[in-house]
Length: 143
Image (cartoon, rainbow, N blue to C red; front, side):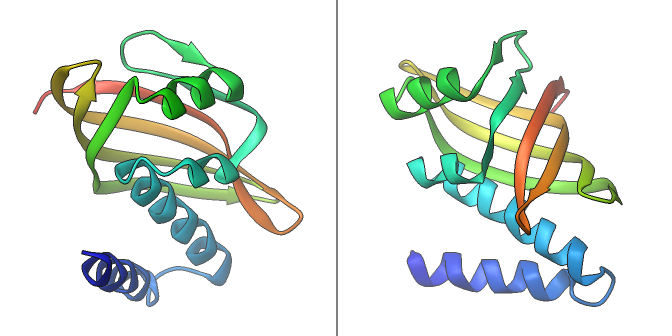
């Protein structure tokens, strides 16, 4: 399983290597890492977040860093898969970047299975040369 993840990770990076700048590639690498860590329910995901992160979920919930950490570490939501299906827009200006992308997510909320297609708007900020997720808003799309 680890070998497959590593292989997919390199395919992702190599797939973008021809059409994106060095800064864009670094950002897309962090985006890929975000999805992978979420899919594996790995608490290292917290290292990708700015301290003042804001999440807007498709069900209307809003969370800050502490709210997300508490829910993620408690297993309230367990992800089985997180897959980007489309990158609609990528814009970088100075230390800020915005991405519009479509992802499919499967998992468990409490003990209920869910599967969603989400349109996501993410704002990333470069802090000390490292991209950190600063804000994320998701809305449900039809499957």
